[in-house]
Length: 248
Image (cartoon, rainbow, N blue to C red; front, side, top):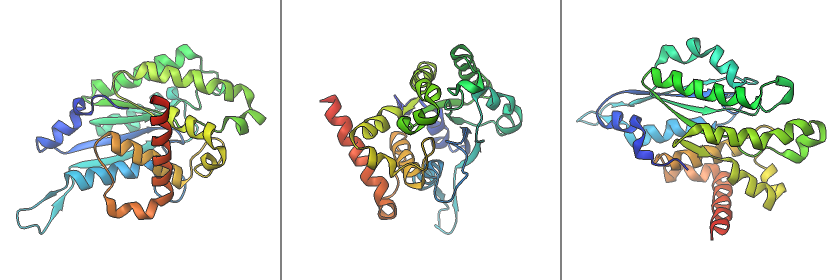
């Protein structure tokens, strides 16, 4: 959970009448590479519905947030840094949502835990130097049984690399991993209905991530849109139930 949301400066800037930029940075978990709505679309939608500005006569509207997707499949965090000056710096984002780490955890990419931690902190330092903030987002729990069948070394690395991201995140962390891991352990068949393959979400899975993040940011998806994503709403509520039972 992101605590405390009100400390994110982006909302204060919007309330002050400024226009802001929100940039999603990461690997294939961020890149919109397949059909259907992406999790970042839900942030765009939430910002639009909550903060859009109408003229006095209600004849025209302006949206105070520009959402930019800078995800590239297969990137490690080091590779995100290599293209930072091209894909991030020119836009001077007020908020960067960083979702990465799966590729760093792949032993064949030769990114040590020390390098991974260093690179995560370097992304934050560069964004802060531009006047922005970073919201770290841990990846959903991958289908480790399927992945372990062909890449046991990669499957074994996912948990410790996720823990490093948590440590680097500081106060602004959306921790998806435990919610998805509870569902995976509770009902693997239900979990797999949200996955495209062992490493990637399908549109329903993207909707769950989007619903969770938009809720955490106080940007709920309007009720009239929910019937179109029934499966994701059901999955989110099941994850909520499993989380409550764990905390009780």
